[in-house]
Length: 128
Image (cartoon, rainbow, N blue to C red; front, side):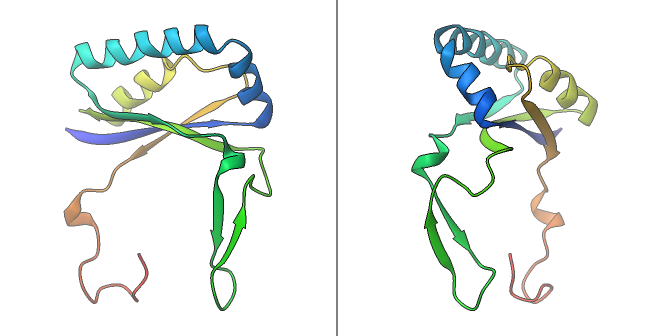
């Protein structure tokens, strides 16, 4: 089994559409989570707060610079995730296709690297 993250991506417009029918969206998401739990594939699921409440730490210069949200570009916002433990990438994709998302949003499917795939001490140049 491998872990895959289903990353919910939206825009200002898709976030507004979801908020306009938040009760229905939450009910559909609750049913989707129940389905994943019954199938035994759900590891974790979290939604994120309004991007306007976040900050960005920018490492482009000599010293990190912190700016308040919202982000400069809000065409694609990271809205939350589902973490699944499934047998294959295709299975993760099939679950992603079932996410109750609003029109215009996207779900990015990424495999979570195993501990033995991450460079250990001295194998990188000090970066994460």
